[in-house]
Image (spheres, helix red, strand yellow):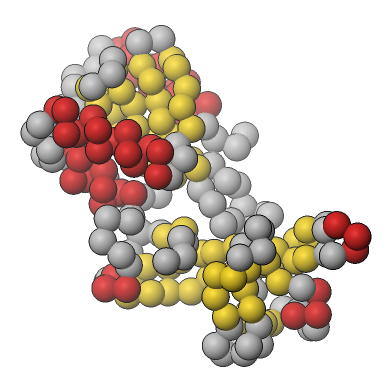
Length: 208
């Protein structure tokens, strides 16, 4: 299985992105990859092969050892929802965990999710924020957060912030909407906590 960056689906179709390494000779005209081109990750492991001509979204040079230069390209495409492995879309997993009534199971599930996707952890007063960064973007695009899960204490999910993605929960106490950002509060927040979350935590994880 190869990981990709997925966007919110439209009518069952996911737009996806993926970075891949190629050699300079694989990109003779600077714009297209041709059938038979081997795609590798930065560690040199094969992750795929080009089956038909594809236009790249972006490229950058990766200097190598002793002139073994490589190019990192950003590829974009669409896959239908049935081709996405169950449990691998972060928002879907968060939806499941927020609906979980067993607090021990829920907490363990979130920790597994944070470890799997390498969430960034930071402390803010009584809150711990876990942020999932955007990946496989072009050089011209900002690489902000995709999602922030905010815990109060070790076992209570207090809020979830999303950036152009959708998360749902059975019981929502309050919401904040400032597109593309949306915040779901699982507990009714006093004004001081709303200010901390909406004006500090949210902006801490932006590429300003």
